[in-house]
Length: 187
Ligand SMILES: *[C@@H]1O[C@H](CO)[C@@H](O)[C@H](O)[C@H]1NC(C)=O
Ligand SMILES: *[C@@H]1O[C@H](CO)[C@@H](O)[C@H](O)[C@H]1NC(C)=O
Ligand SMILES: *[C@@H]1O[C@H](CO)[C@@H](O)[C@H](O)[C@H]1NC(C)=O
Image (cartoon, rainbow, N blue to C red; front, side, top):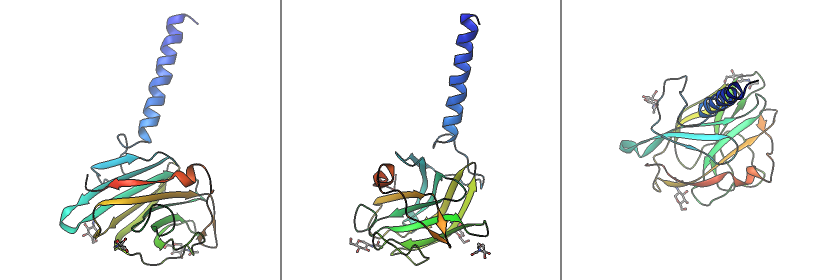
């Protein structure tokens, strides 16, 4: 192969990798539901992204949390109003139930061995839905009013299995324990 055609090939590969990767990030992503979110961050671990709109009139946020996952795994996104880690998190979890239907509900994480069963949170959550496409699970929800302000500690998580309708334990090292941060949701 001539040097110029080799260079052309490399440019093509780099360009296509760029398009593949932007499809996975905030800027390149379009929701199949036509919903538009003005804010988004690519989270640093677990191939996850949080899109949101702050709704000042209700002090609420409309969120879409999406993360790479296999069809048999689960994803979760949470606000922790009382701390920074897992315990105390007010979580929304999504997975395929045993009928193969995407299921989404809220569950408070009260200990390191939480029930992971549907229960209400310390703040209102509405408009819940979930979807699975292109090896990604997405949770959509309206969260709030946020009584303690718009700067929150959030936590996100992924696990590979669900048993009898209950998401099973996630890895307890590496990315799965780095998946937390602070966010100003009014921005
Ligand atoms: C607001 O913060 C207090 C104190 O940390 C906490 O107990 C309470 O659960 C929070 N409220 C909500 C709605 O999360
Ligand atoms: C799975 O979810 C669908 C939709 O909510 C529901 O109709 C079905 O009964 C669920 N299957 C199981 C096994 O819970
Ligand atoms: C939430 O659901 C209500 C009732 O269906 C609807 O009026 C509202 O527009 C929804 N909110 C968002 C942000 O989609």
